[in-house]
Length: 262
Image (cartoon, rainbow, N blue to C red; front, side):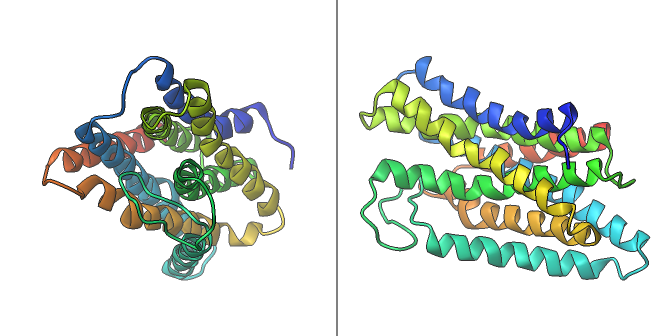
């Protein structure tokens, strides 16, 4: 399947968001205040939840219903495969969450910096897959996926990737890593998104009848990241409602984008 300019733009938008966010290391000094981290993490979680529902699960249900099968079957199966896939990656990829000192996954001799980057890569994988599967559906002419709907998903993820890029580069700079190196690590954490998107687009032409399963798979993977990583990071430490408000902001923004453009 050839990649049209529209598809290329769509799969690169989230990566651009990460890159611009990582570039904050050249403009800001010090690390992110804990409340700012809560805002960024909560906002990202809200965007991902809304995208999972309006951009992935609802189109999966619509496509399954149009094919004459029970609409919930592909949604349930694909969703659970996505959950289990991320659970598997969570156990086999060594990573370290922000504000944590305990490594998750296998014990290997990687630096703290690399483990922090791997933690972000882990939850960028389903985001890239989500963009890829939606644009694959668009490219194959599925009526339930419009160009505007695909763009809204890509744009929403790009918006929430901006703070994610900053969350990587600024803490690394605060730990003594050089500005340029911190920026590069932030950018590298987002490279997996266009790679995952292209992989999904390449695979979908052979698995087109299973598109509802792939859409639900991406939704399950994204929601795993939200519940396993983002919400705990948003809520840890001294109690604050700021993360919840940021979540609601991200959710309503992504919902509005999808409904308005879709």
